[in-house]
Length: 360
Image 1 (tube, rainbow, N blue to C red):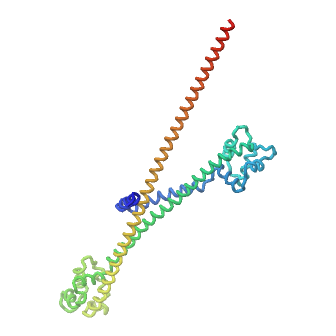
Image 2: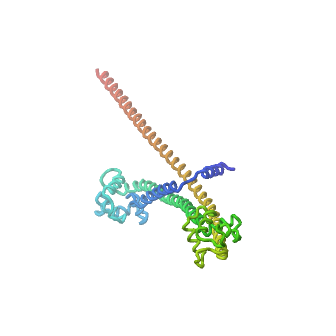
Image 3: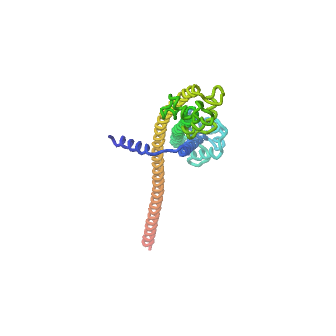
């Protein structure tokens, strides 16, 4: 097994041991959706003027000479700040450009700070701007990938939430099946006692008075003995259903017919419960797979975030190191200049002293 395959297996084993509640998944999905929205907002925000300027040049296949020609109103082959402000708005195809932004780009291109742009300056600056534009394009692509990434993560987490909701719905069906009609519960009780088809035995259990019929009180009492959770009201309702001739009592034929329907109802409820239990087991496995996928994704995202933080810290250290190196180089250059100046001063003083000596 390769190191990578071993790592994948270890991550999967770790992820399989983690259990997510619905509340935890909802919170995670909200975070992921927020990150996606933030990335999408950045994508929908206005592009920097430098990028729009370069995109316009590329779209129109314009070079530095063409820019000068398009913006140079007085035909002196130079672009003033005012000509630039108007020209770049026209070039990028919008008036929604802030003056400070146009001036910032102008000052970047105006290398000699003369207040106008000539073709040489524009050619030199375009090479620098194209590098910045490429960097901006890369950053925008990275943001786009982030938006897609977090949308996919949010969808994955929503799938895990939906899996738990499916289990809840199935368990509600199971609870309903278990809390079936009294007819079904009574049939199940008779089936457990092997009395489902022994009408005479059931009649003898219910017919306390021994008169051959079962009255309402006897029926309620008999049901309670078989189904302790049965309410008296539902027992009375069932009694009235079974007492088809409304005689006020249940005879042997009515009991036999009722017991047949009780068994059917019990078998149907049992079949539904068995089917639902199997379905719930499948749903639980699917939910576990979904949660493992979510956990693996989170492990990957946490690792990526830690790496990004490490890289950022390293970049800051490198930047600080570069600044310190620049300061050191500046100090050394200054020291060199001071030393050179001191050496020149001494040489000059020596020369003056020598001249004075010779003149004396």
